[in-house]
Each structure stands twice: as C-alpha cells, then as structure tokens.
Length: 115
Length: 122
Image 1 (cartoon, rainbow over the protein chains, first blue to last red):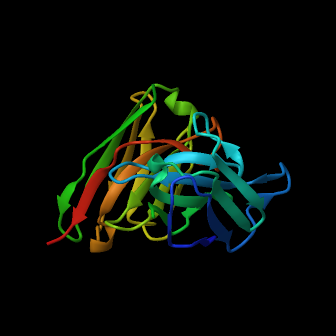
Image 2 (spheres, each protein chain N blue to C red):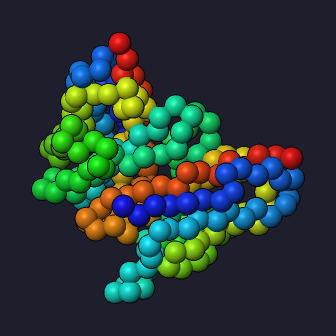
C-alpha cells in the first residue's frame, strides 16, 4: 500500500497568517497517461465528516474558498491556506487514490489551531 | 441535494456480526463508486472498502479482507457493509462516501454521510 505522511502533526497560527501543510507519498501518485496526480485534500471539523477541498492535487472543489490551494507532483504535495480564517480551524488530511486496484490511503492528519 | 444516511451501527461483542446500510439520494446512484471509510475514536481516516457503480467489482483494505463484504442495491439506492468476525480494533465511526466522478473508481469522495458508530466490546 502507498503510505501517506503528513507534516506537521499540528500547528497554531494567528488569524490572517499563511498555513502550509505537507504530504509525502511513499511512491509517486502521478499517472503519466493523463498527467494527473491522484491526490486529494480534506478538511474535518469536530463532529463532522470530512469535506473535500482539493483533488487532482490542485483542483479546488466547487464552493471551496480560493484561499485554499494545492500544489505538488509525484510524491510531494502541499496544501496552503493563504490567510487563515477562524472557520478554518480543523484537521486536514491528504489522500491518495492512485493505487490500482483501488486501495485508497489517508495521511495521519494535521490539526490547525488558532494561536 | 445529495444525501447519504448511514444506519445499523451499535454495540456488538467480539466475534459478532453487524450490517451497516447507507441510503443515498439526490444523484444517479448506479453511476458512482461508493466506499466505506472509518474513523476510530481520536484517530484519522481509514478507507475500508469500495464498490464500483455497477456492483461488479469490490475492493477491501487488508485489515478487513475476508471479514467484511460490501454490496449495493442500485434499484433501492442502498449501500451495505456486512461485518463479520468483528474485533475491538474495528470500533469506529463508519462513513459511507460517494466518488466525485461518474463511472470511475479511483476518485476522491465528494459527499459523506454523518456516520454510524460501531463499538466492538464485551
């Protein structure tokens, strides 16, 4: 199975500050046939299911604010929140969906708190 | 509006069985792969199983292979997870989740249910 490793485990930032979360896969999740990275990012708030933010590593899901962006390719990926808002306090997960046959795996999560 | 509603969770003894259901609405159910994803208390997400839209292909995490069975009834817009030989480590909130692109299996999940809690304990 592809192992997803996120860093840091947690971080505390002030409102308006930039947040960067990293995700590394144990093997490449780039599919050359369609030039896509099979990597998604989710946000989970307490007591709620995860919410899809980004897929194909950098495509923002409909309705997601543009302060959220994804980047990276191959094995190294980043989720950036350009200016943290209070409602962004949550745990963020990366997920690969590259494995064939399907064996989707998540990173361990990064908890974002207010400083 | 897409809705996914899980049911069937509860307390079960180790070695016991439980069947989870997920009622789907608001989209053409048969066009989308569906998955079960679980989250143990205080832990992260773990994908459990996936079934293609037609129901003809199923996939499992190694941790549940041979014990859990995923199925669907496209005529009723229902997804199921039959869980046998349950263990304490299967204790978690179980979510059903919808693939975000039609007719593809290797996709992320754009809609999730609220989850149903399964507790395996004597």
